[in-house]
Image (cartoon, rainbow, N blue to C red; front, side, top):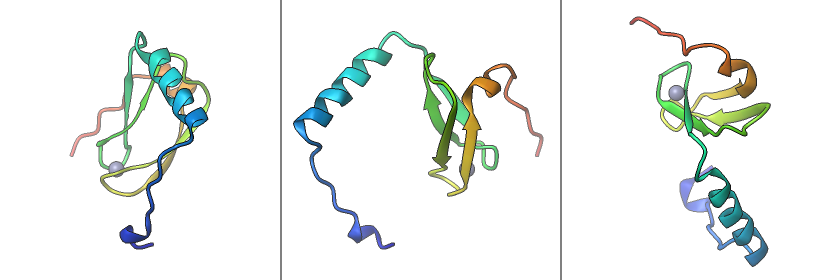
Length: 82
Ligand SMILES: [Zn+2]
């Protein structure tokens, strides 16, 4: 897909209210950065109430990874050596 094909429209009022509510909900939560397992770029940010699986496409290397947020919480991030 060509980048110029992307159309940006303002979300509906209802959606904007949801976005504001979501913003307020995470204000007091500690963000946790999950790194892309391939390039170690910060791929996604999850909050304390994030549960289950999230899929993210890394902005840097473009790989799509599914993260099991709850499961990954139990482990320290793996340290890779180059
Ligand atoms: Zn990556």
